[in-house]
Image (cartoon, rainbow, N blue to C red; front, side):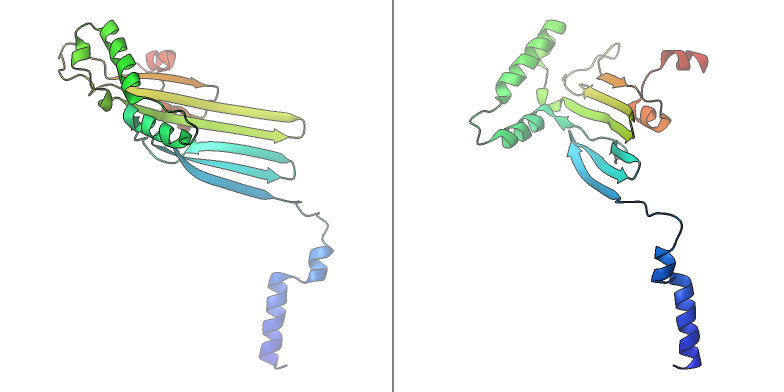
Length: 195
């Protein structure tokens, strides 16, 4: 072996270590590590789910991956539900759903149901967050869910004095700022304290 090759071989082994060095180390290996994930779309929003297994336990995480959920109209949701259950003999009748929603609109604002356009009603999953970590005998669970219904374009005419644009519902137990900001939660005390 030439001197250059010998020096290169020594540098390579020094960088990588030898089998004896790896086996003779004081620290045991980390055990089996597993990481798996999936990207998915739900109600027009893009999300990522991940599973992680380490030597001390495992974790599950579901988070949004887009900055703003596009949402889906009632017609799109019904079409997708019918595609999912096709072959089962069951289906959702769009005209029935639209009729019920128009009845609801009429009950809340008599006379407006005539101009109510269900195809413009958009449902947005603003936040879907789940974090679960199990380590030994202890576990941690954090979650956040926020749903928004956008009715801003559902009525043919808008009154300048008053109108209903969106209705939202949120439930959570996390204090992670990035998660809460996406949900656009109205924390009354924080709002008053900032004024």
